[in-house]
Image 1: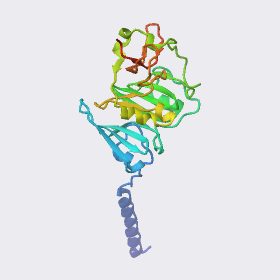
Image 2: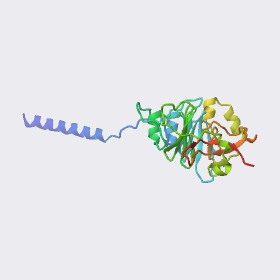
Image 3: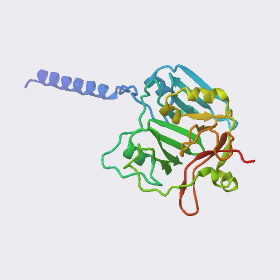
Length: 264
């Protein structure tokens, strides 16, 4: 090969190497998100779902930035711009925590959020109640988590075969002396407009709804034992406006969350 041809070959090779280096240096185009999940930013939700129908902003005494985006009757809840919960309604939310895994271990007390997802898939709705507490809704059933770990559940058919055995208090929760549960109880004052709007929803949406205080803190409208805010107590004849968080008795029995009337 003549020097002229050799030089041409060398130049061609260098050009190819240079083009390859330039190609590898190009930024990789980012793919637009197709779903959002727990902890996603408001920007991601807007990319996935588009502009919300309306936005509700809440003032909170602890200076938390709480808001709810509405897509029809579906909602996405945020704290400081990050997703903390959602509720499926008239418009399907493109949300995912992951898919169910065939043969996954059943849910038990102490299971992680990822283990719940493996057993049940993405919850239809998720509500965060502050202090690390959240409920994952599967139909009419709920799985309750504290700081990312399962503390209990209420199975109304949707969790059958997906949980371990659980000792549940069999009595009427409201007959438990108030002094014994006062540390788990919160008295609520909810505007009538909120409850009226909830009663206008289909049953599943109503069961998965939350009521919110003026401070921004929210509570489930329907408790784990199926009692609900404002229900007339058969024990006292007064409205049930006190929410009692679930807890374990000294005998190990799980007392599901419930509503009760104020004590005299």
